[in-house]
Image (tube, rainbow, N blue to C red; front, side, top):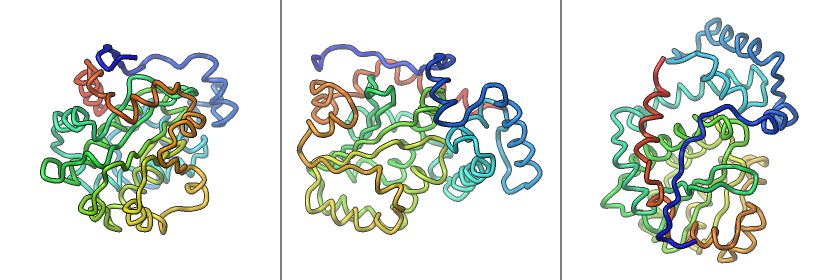
Length: 281
């Protein structure tokens, strides 16, 4: 694939195919015969317990939380409360966000979403930390872009069911960049990826890590339980091993790690329109 090829990525907002619903039934305990009763039960629990002030409780919105927690109502409720608590405790990440900043981060290849998926149909989100210009983008803007991108992704039912994967490319990482990863920042990242957002992170792939990466990883270690550790894979400079894990072609892996992605998303502004629609109700 040429870097000049136009690859258009659109949000898949339609109903999931039958085979994916079968997968959800087998792997997420999502039974179409009882789905809406479980949603109703979750809604009743939210209002009965009153642990947060929800901005939405429609069926489509609540379904995200149930899918993220295998249709266990208690766990879905805790995730729902955590989601609202996180946003209330971190208003700088979600209020008055300029979506053009998100687009610029993509154009600079710092945070990108390729227009293709890995072999199982999951979206890929990539961070190239060595390209993060500290004078151009604040840590708050990095969080804003992350959350906005995840909010867009979770509009897709496919993403709700399958989750997504993250690739962190640490080539060119400086000590100055590494020192931005304080324990507070690490905890917030953990909240977004594990406890407070209704999308499952299926795997995290670390590539091109150097000794400076150890500074960051040592800060994260206290927040990682055994289940999370099993989803983190370290590849160094070996792209072929990563390809085996995420089932993409070597050519695509080269694009991921070398040069492109977001500049091919010609309708990226459309994603922003859809996320604003998703905040209604």
